[in-house]
Length: 151
Length: 464
Ligand SMILES: [Zn+2]
Image (cartoon, rainbow over all chains, first blue to last red; front, side, top):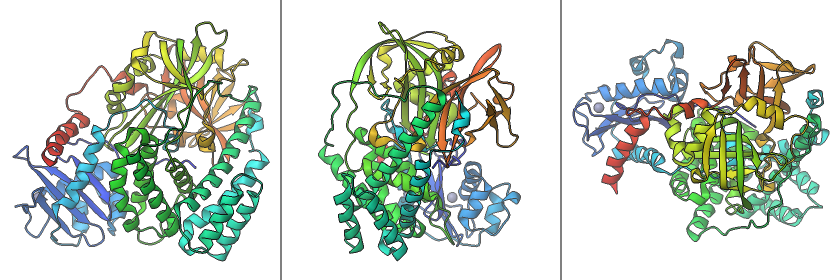
């Protein structure tokens, strides 16, 4: 059976190279505005709405003071671009109407959680898994199974 | 050509669907908690295999599972049984389509060679771990999956993706894993594409039993004329399949064939951004697609099933072509039997793609929301669900079209047509995925791919 899967939409990756809905979290990696070699690792947990932001070396983000920092807000904005409001609202278990969500801040107001530290490595290793896809070589061998994956 | 004959599937196909349905229930419930109804359905399916080579293994599998003896080989038997049914359905459908279109059923070319290849030892370990994971999914049941069952497989998948000889298994498992993760974790009742997931599961299990045999091939020399292309993708993998006729030197009649380029990718890479990736192995093929062109092949390998193993070094673009005129010539009354097929183990109704040509005036476009074609008084749906997002060809191109090349597809119990190339009168024909090829020359320095590659270069180096 063929079931068209709505592909995530393309978006600019300069500021937020990576965002995903995964294992009950909205998580991703946000570039530092000042240091090109630094990235922030940010996440929100579905249902609880708990969040955290730190550098990939586990140093807490300075902008995190009881409420989401600018990296977390950037993450929400990009999640909306990539997945659309309906999917993000459903995945995070937010009781709001997706049609009324225009930007990340609208999502953030509906989240009830507070800062909750997790190891940056948990999210960062997902980013490395993601990046490994851009380094795998293409092939001209037939892949008949792709006939199941339309769109 | 009579599309009226395609209004209903053959009776055998309808019966087979009922048998599959009963089996699929067990996959949703989970083999670790089968109901008596599930067990009866399995026993009934086992009886229908009594006179086949699978009989003994099937009986052993059912007894074993009934005793909670959970071994991957029992589940491999279930996958094989299911694939055998789908293979028979495929064959019945292709025969029906060929008869309705007034053409011979497609035939593999007789080429000597082709052999099974043992997977390298490292790959064997990975495949064993894939079989183990697939068995765990079946034991839990698709309705009861939890991320604890799904997530640990990622590490194995990463390793499978690094092994070029497991590309088919990797592309499939990455797609299946992505779909599972889009549904789970789930609060309340999950929405499960039942038949689809069991299809994907079965194919993955069979590919995990060992790397498929290499198909026999021979070198060809002649002119390839592009008819159209299809783009297939999920978040982390994309495949461009190009359909063409091949006029070989010294052969009176042309044959039809397929060529493809595939790559892993990330979700943000789509459309034109796929061009530079595909071009790494198929630049000439892409350039040909951009102009509906003619390509000279010299020494390119053609497999018995009609797949060209693309090699840019053995191809040269010789100019623009006329895909619609070529389709009219090769897909009319003299459609050759030598056209693309699937290997016996790969046959499945969802993978049928029979090339068709509809001349101007032989069809009308009907339907507002769900477009359909009326051909000789018969109504044939347009397979919009298979229509990739492509600027090269959009649904509105159908209106006022002057002929088309498409693929006859089968899904959900009905035939449909997926247009690939549409004639627009004086303007150049519109071709699916042609924008991927057209964007090749204009390299953008700020593409998401180059940004991510730069990141990957820095971070992966630091890490390793
Ligand atoms: Zn931050």
